[in-house]
Length: 425
Image 1 (spheres, rainbow, N blue to C red):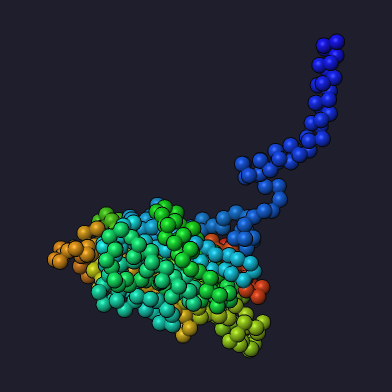
Image 2: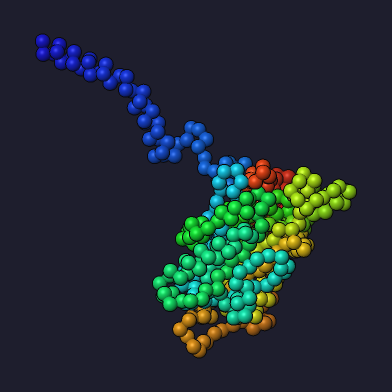
């Protein structure tokens, strides 16, 4: 009797819980989804939904593109220069916000109290670069360098000032020369909404780190266009041999300009049918607005910001000379630096011996002589050229404001063209 009653109770418990099994199954699936990242459906983020490539796109070197004769650093990035850190915040909302901010820190300390030698060179001044006059007057920078879109420059500068004033040791500071540069992402982004603010700036600064740098449609490059294709953030570096000092040069670019895309001498833009003046040479009407008569392929305005870092001990004068050479790398990619393109280069040295410490009245510095500059010039040209290529090959398609599309550079077709002209093997 006991066994019978026990069996009966077990049967009742089983019948009681059987209806609950489907619920437990659902809960188990949910647990798997969130604990192990298993997603049977497309629950991807707004950022991922803007890309057409499921896997990361290649860098230029992955395609066999070798620029120049000097070797790159370990990361082939601006962060190969010891101490330099990069952070980014990407802002994608709804169907029209496609923008962000990119931060470059010359060193991880308090830049106001330990400034670095710097200079700014203007190739074509159709742009907004806050802080440039003081940099060229004093030959130093005292804040991180922030890149964003045109109409967000004042808001980003305001947030950067707030960040700097809050740093320990800056309690009595009453003047900050913030460095903020821009390109205009208004084709893909609701630029008039001025969506980048304190949260994005602080996120970029807090996330700044050494090592690999994310490239393409991220940060300040989220909504940019280059050579009629999706542009963005790109970076590269070069190492000098020990008999030339063993110095490192690193470059980071925000590409949003046009021209006739040329890669290692191959006329890629012309072969792909997207290049500056194409429609006009064909006798087609090109307007100055965003109408269908004004295709992206015929644009060459828009701007590029180039940031050059080096650990070579340079003063502001030779840093300005170094910055000027970056425009030679820009020209190699096919840019004519048009009237409406703001082409700016910011160069700085991280050499510890040459930092400008606020409490030092008399400074002892070392600097390379003029004749030692030529290898650094070569390194800058090569790194700039490759950084621009990386901004294109890594960028993914973005759909934004009014359904406008920034189409990614077609990799397979590009490789075919490069092989056709002997630009790669």
